[in-house]
Image 1 (tube, rainbow, N blue to C red):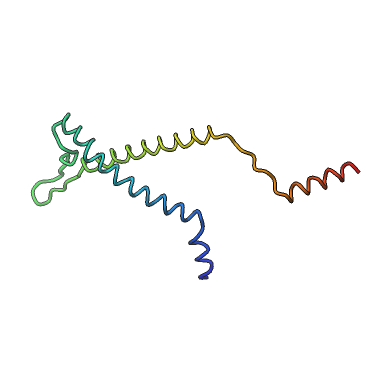
Image 2: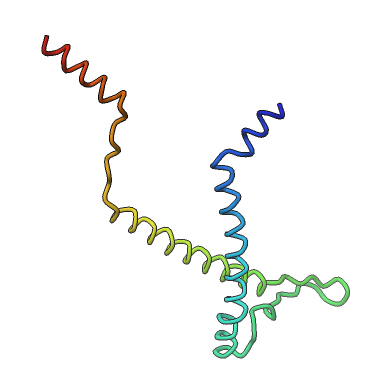
Length: 125
């Protein structure tokens, strides 16, 4: 069982997924900083509020009042849309580079070449 776990843990795909997850978390921090530091400041200059956090819907009165934080939700939506857009651009650029790279046919191994020679000799006889 320990051997199976080791084989699972050191698979190339698992390592690639872990690296991708770490990069995604770091990228999320960059996008959050961009949204909080740039986008929200631009919105504050246009609207007069520094963020959407002040948008709250209150239900009830007094001690029984419940606040629904609509502004926090809008900020999360802006973050999501920015992350999705940047990832779209990254995937689009990757696909464009992949299409422009010429396909190079892999040379067959010596065994394949030998088998083909044998096949061709058998056809001739």
